[in-house]
Length: 425
Image (cartoon, rainbow, N blue to C red):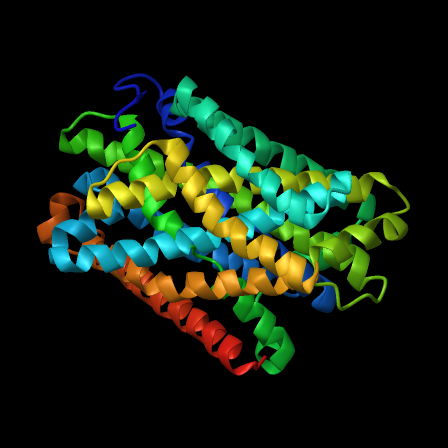
């Protein structure tokens, strides 16, 4: 995978950029998982367009942290897992690897549930059977890897395009108040004054950065075959950062679309308690007067689940090889991770019913939050170190911004864990 995608050393800026487009879109997938969908639906149905400003701030935070991943991968030539292995004692690598694997499994759990719900909404397949069917995605990944890394990127971008198109059509049907949409992106003190709104805002912010995305991005940028001199690496960092920024802007568009759709339909109709994905699907048809809307919603959710499964697999390979230098066959790696995620998903669905899948989604987000400091803190420290980065060390203003963002995100995630443990809200 390393240096497998050729780039242009000369030519126009646009041609050079095209060669670097791809990794950012694989990373963007992690910012629109089923957990994000549920939060955006809840925020839009409860408070209309007011929380769009939180989605915007969250996206800015993500852009800054992912830019550090680009800088680490290109400038130091190491992904985050490798950098941790280099910097810390050998005895620390195994527990760090284990926590990263737990986070990836938690991510996969959310993807299993999201894909199963999508299959249920579109084809009426029972959730427990849909969860088992998701194990077959290993064959899709193997087929794409056989054709080359560019094919994986093209598949992900194509599915993102389908998701964006589905929401564009639904929003056109919903005909939102565009003046209110624009005002929703402006900061408001109402979020601080309303405890319930603040809690949902914390949920959106707290789920911004997925730990596996930081490992993934720092590894994927190294798939480009750039030269080893300082000037070429500086240009590679610039182009790869543009790639991730554009991709995360697309992620913002899709997340904002979910919130806008919920505000224009559910909130407008007085249905302010929509939080489950199947609820949203059921109410879209009567509210929009078309059976096409819920079908598009289900298609978008299914595409999201398929996309996420690819990025989780790639992240798992990077983490395992980076921390403990063990390589196993991609199909075996995928099957093990997926089986670990499928067992609790099937068990909970059979034991407690379909409604429990929502609680399982929340649990997966809590597990992710516990792992977050082990990924964010080393990333900020490594990219701020001239000894590790040399001339590619992050500017002080970027490091300062990243420190503030890291503290905010970690604090919000810890609050999520506290609320989950105490049952508060």
